[in-house]
Structures are given as structure tokens and as C-alpha cells.
Image (cartoon, rainbow, N blue to C red; front, side, top):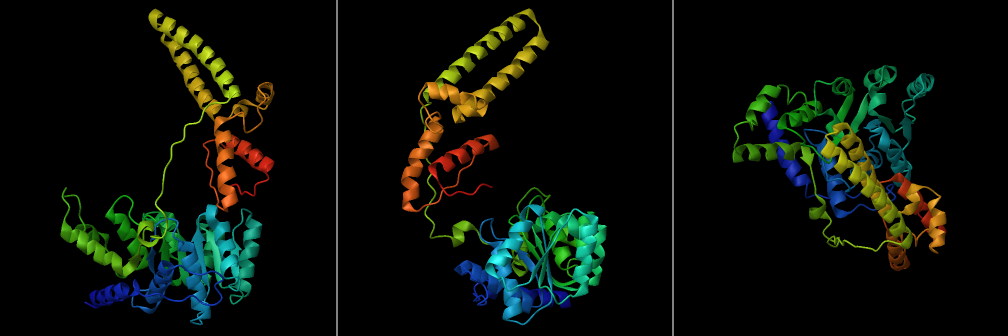
Length: 398
């Protein structure tokens, strides 16, 4: 009855909102891209509609954090809504949230709530309760939000305007303690951020919906039966119903849909020759490997399985050493620098890969472009960092 009517209105409002852009407040110190303005418009429409909150499920890299920061700024500076909001995020991105607030909307008063010390948490708790009007946003971690010390203040003492869960798919299981404790937070609206709203099954979708609107999604059995995919066939009606349901609560954009101005990605596999140092090192490694292979063959013929196993582990170690040799000889230790010097090779010239990188940077950097470098070994990143310092390149390491 009433719930169905509310849902129908929400579907219509969501459909209109996805095509409506909102201009950010002047306090936002960076421009929004067109699709981000649409995201801001959708968040505002959810705020103004019958079903508040929802799931911002844009693909990773499209700026979900930025859009939420713009929205919270919009609420305060354009709508005059000053109630505090709580952002819960993984520890790995907690600092990023705080820095992005300072960078984009420095006029929003943001408190970072995280500490491993019980005494310090108690101090934070007292300071928050001392003056609830002294902050606009509290940013904390999932662990802090669920901790006994802070649960009372976060869940009972403060009535939040918005509860924002970054990596919202972490509450996909309604039977967990984390789910229960976050559900107990007193808030007017809830917003989940995730790049993967559907992971394993549709029941997890119900868990997210129940967290957002328990009054509409009270019984999982009804939901599970309506969207039962266990029959082994794809029911187009089920797919349509699921899409209609999601349209009222979720907005999702993909990079290929909204970043059409980006050039297509070109992948180039570049084979580079080894340096003289690498050739000498690989020769020595292969000679030692030949001895191991000879022992393995003899042990196999004699039926000594334990000896074969030990030699096999040595062969695996050899393969790893050959991989390291292909990256840079100094991965074996700084003593390899002396070997390189005998061949007249410096840090870059003693590695075919680093020599190729040096040549590429000679072309790319003068053009004002930026470069992202990846490596499977942090020790190789150490060498690359040393190489960049020698070139006097500006760089940041993550």
C-alpha cells in the first residue's frame, strides 16, 4: 500500500534526477565534471525525495569521495543544513578523506576520530560531546565505529544528519556484529559508497537495502523469493524488477560511459636486451641450475624422492632469481654494483629495463606528461627511487 506508493514516487524521482545536474557551492575549490554534477543532482534529489539516502556505486576512479564532499558542502552552504555527518571509511583511506575535505572544502569543519590509545579515544569522546556545534563532519574507521569506547557516542549520544559508509559492501552480511553496530547509529540518512554493489548473490543486495531502509526491506524471505536465481535460467522479468528496484536507491556510472574524452588505451609489450652485467649474472645462475638439474635426474633414477623434493625447491628459487636478474642486478645486493662497474655500467645501464625506462622518460617528461610506475618488488621500487633522484625527477611513492 503506502510503501508501494512511496517506492513508485522514488523511482520516478530517481529517473528524473539522473539527468539533472546541480552546480556545487562556491565553497568547493575544484570544478565538478558533468557526470559528477549529475551525481550531485542525484544525491540532492535523494535528500529531497521520499526515500532518502542510497548507494553511490560509480566505478572506481570516478570520484565518489569528491562527489560526497561536494554534497555535504552543498547541504551546509546552499541548504543551510548544519547537522553533523559521520563518515566511516577503511583505515587505509582515512587520511585521504581528511585531506580531500581540507583541499576541496576547507570551510567544512572536519574531525579525524581515530587512535589506538584508549586514553586518547576517551579524550576525543569528551571533546566531541563538549560542543556538538563545533564540527560539521567526523571521519572515522570501521574499527573505531564498532569499538566499545566510542559506540555510545557514535550510536546514541549524537543524532547524525548523514551516515556515509565508504566501501559500503563491507556490510553485505546482516549477521555480523559490524552490521548491527552500524545499524544502531542514529541518523536521518544513510549513504553507501561502493564500486561493487553486487558481489556474490542478490541476498547481499537485500542486506544493503535493509541497512538503508529496514522499514521497506523488513523480510529477506520475500526478497529472496522474488529474485530467486536458483532455477538455473535467467528470468528477464527478474532482471527488469531488479533494475527498477535499484534505480530508486542507486546510481552507477562506468568510465567508458562518462569519460568519453579519454583516448583509448594502447598496450605495448616492449622487449629489451639484457645489460652485460645481467648476462654475466644469468650465466652464473644457469650454471648453478644445471648442477641442480643433474642432481634431480640422478635422484629420480635412484628413487630418492626426498632429494628430488629438495632440489625442486632450489629450482623454484633459481627461477625467482632469474626474474630478479631481469629487473636489476642490484636486487641481489649492493655488491653487484662492483660487478657493473667492471663492465662500465651505472645504475641505469646495468639493467635493460631501467635503461629503457630512462630513454622513455627522456621523451615523456619534457612533454609535461606524468608517469605511473609499478613493480612487484618494493626493493625494485627502492632502486627506481634512487634512479629518479639521480635524474632529479619530482616523484611521489605510494
